[in-house]
Every structure is written in structure tokens, then in C-alpha cells.
Image (cartoon, rainbow over all chains, first blue to last red; front, top):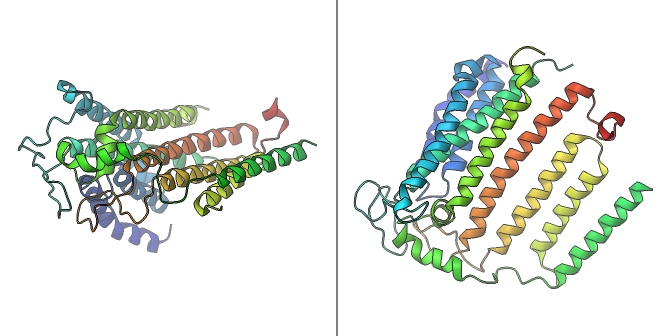
Length: 151
Length: 91
Length: 112
């Protein structure tokens, strides 16, 4: 691609990543969560592939790295779910305990406190990691393949 | 011949859907809201999450989300599998 | 009585189905399936709407009358599943194009 596209992708790379991380980490307070945040970060991979060509895939760590990130995300999600087995599967064992992410919330409209939510921020992080890795993997594989021998 | 059969069945489907629109509930009046009212009024005390959708997604209906994440994993694995020949270089 | 949201759902679903039934290009069939999925998502969301309510998020909420959260969570699930199924279908189409050099779903070798 031309120099304009490359420069613009480099310019918006950091804001897009920060916005995606914001959406993931504030999933229990604002609209968003793991799925939209992971998708926002994965759009950056698509942009970089379009701008820099196939070589950007290797710089991102390649298929093996993304595949292991995806497995780690799914494993973390199920692991956090299993940690709540004391009450039920997917039991929220951190909520209202006063520890990490454990502040209690009163009913009604409030300005929001990041230190709430119990296990939901951890699950958001795990799902965001998995969605980012899976979408990047799909985009990367389809892109590198379709570039191969199109007539 | 086949094309007209397809068109006729589509028109029949359209007529049935339009017929069911006549008995549709009015917009903005949900049928039974007891479960969702419980979620709205209790998610802040039980889950301590301001976002009720996230509380439903990750706690009350967590198994749904686990299945969804598994489907995403399986789809990525499937794309990997479909392209495995051309990715490994021998074709 | 005409309910406008359901009319839009009907239009989307029938348009998508007609694309699936009448088109021969496989990418257009996938597009039709996506249009059907949009109609279904619109149906789910509109079933959960409550008159004059706000989104079910308590952070700086102007009102405590809220729309139903469960259809929204299910719609999020449906969107992600639709995305993955679309990716899988498109990769199958790429492989079929590599083998048959054609996107026509009525081709003799694909039908057989």
C-alpha cells in the first residue's frame, strides 16, 4: 500500500489498542466487554495486514503464537468458571468480599467504581484475549492464503 | 419450473409471516418480564456489576458464554484445518 | 394492525431467503445468510424493548426503568456465532474456488 495508508495505520495503532483495552477492562461498568473489545483490537491486525502485506503476520508472532493465545484465553475462562465451584459452576466467589474487585455496590444509579464486579473483569480479560486471538488468526490465515495464487 | 416453485414457496412464507404480524404484540410491551426484573433489581447486590448485560452474560448464563467461546475456538481451528495443506507449503 | 419492527424483520428475512434461494454465486448466498441473521437479531432485540426504557446499565443511569437484558446477551452470542460461521463458510468457498475455479453453486460437479 501507499505511504499514506502506512502512516495512518501507524498513527491510529496506539489509540485503537488503548480504546480496545478500555472497552475490555471497563466491561462491568460501561457498554462493552470482552467480545467488542477483542474485536476492536483485532481490527488493528486487519489494518496492518492490509497496509504492510503478508510480512506483518510474521511480526505479530505468527500463527503458532496467536493459536496459543487463543487456547490460553479459553482455558483461563473455564478455569475462572471452575474456581467458583464452591457454590455453583460460574459462581461469583469474589463479589462483595472487599478484596480485589470486591467492593459492594448499592442498588441504583451511581457513577461507577472500577473495583467491583467479582470475577467478571477476569472473565472479560480472558474472553477478550480469546476473541482477539481467534479473529486475528482467522484474518491472518484467510489473508495469507488468498494472496497466494489468485488469478 | 423449479424457479416458479421456489418463488411460490417464498410468497407463501411471506404471506404466513404477514399473517402472524396481525396477531403480534404491540411494540414496547414484553410478554413476561419476571426473570429480567429479577436480573435488573438483583445484579448489583449479587454480582456487584453495574452492567446488567455483562452480569447475565458471565454469571447467570455463563454456560451460554462458555459454549460461545468454544464455538469461536472451534471455528478458528476449522479455518486452520481447511487451509492446512496450503499453509504447510506442499500442495 | 401493523407492527413496524416485525415488518422490518419480515422484509429482512424474506430478502435474505430469496438471495439464498435464487442466487447462484456462493458469496451472494453467504451474504443472504448474513441478512437473515440481521433480521433475527433485530427480532430478538425488539422483543426485549420496553416503552420509554433505557439500556440496562446502572452507571450514570438517568432512569431505573430498563429494557430486558437477556435478549441483549443472547443477541451478543448470536452475533459472535454468526461471525464465526461466516468465516468458516468463506474459507470453504475459497477452497471450493481453488478446486473448481468457479463460484457457481449450480455447477455440475458441485451438484453431483
